[in-house]
Length: 123
Image (tube, rainbow, N blue to C red):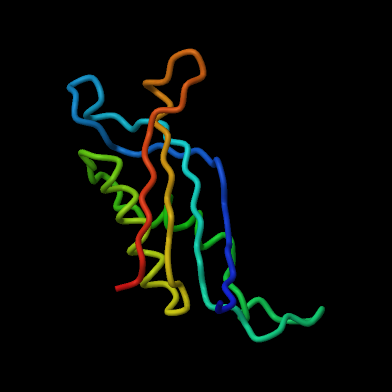
């Protein structure tokens, strides 16, 4: 089996224009997003290995915050996840796969987690 490096940013919250119902459209909704990236690792990580041998974790958060087009309404959270995946593939050729989990916080009741998970492999 080939080596792989898994990077994760879990359970951060951001507001995104998304939804299909009239009460959801026109205003940002809070989403809880987790992102997992599988990438090709360096052959070896020494104690003084530079960041360029891996990927900055903040790039994952950037893909789910700043890289989402301002003012664009995503009908489905699946489209939000797809945009995040594509952003990460464009950022770094070493990214082999991306998994994005999104929980819609505004519709949760009694602590349930309503959302979806999308995994994309580099094509």
